[in-house]
Amino acid sequence: MLPKAKKVVYFVRHGQSVDNVLPVFQSAETPLSDKGQRQAVQIADRISSLSFDALISSTQPRAAQTAQAIASKTGKSVEFSKLFVERIKPTSIDGKPWDDDRASKVWRQWEESLYNPVSHIEDGENYDDIVQRADKALAYLLKRPEQSIVVVSHGYFLRTIVARVLLGNRLNGDIHRKIQMVASMENTAITVLFYTDAFEEDECWRLWTYNDHAHFAE
Image (cartoon, helix red, strand yellow):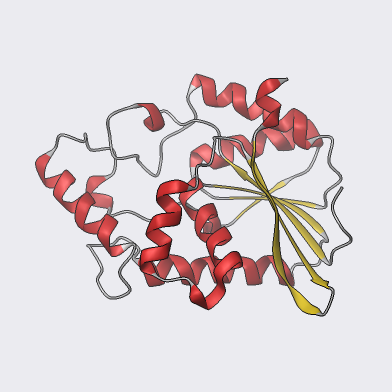
């Protein structure tokens, strides 16, 4: 049971996408696969047991479809926000196969920029961009009037949010790289943050649950 908190946010990673299982650089517009649609139904069933006040989703189709499944099960309407989209890759490589030489080169350069606060590769986000967006997303959620919120988002971006909550200004590019490499997150897993104080500690965001996918065992 969650401790009493000023704000509770249940983050849900989207279901498996078509591009998740293809040898391509995932397109921002890829929809859920058949398996992903089944996963969306599973997580909707689980979320329906929660009491929550608002449902927010990334605008990207794989997240939006997952959120719509939750909406259908719970009767909540979905609000869409670009704050919660996945890391923004260079559009020139969207959907390109891994063995495309140019796309592969751009991908490697962009991946490096995600841990480098200086460089940009084409129109992709870099380290500063995604960390600042994570901060904006947390501030946005804190300012909302609802006490309990479900947010459907994406693996890389959710790991960035968790890293920022755990490490604050001590987060840097090298640590961010390590977290992204070793902190697994399953499709439709639940990660819970709450905002509260503690004994002799001021209010802040705190991690309660990470990568909970117990609904797969049901």
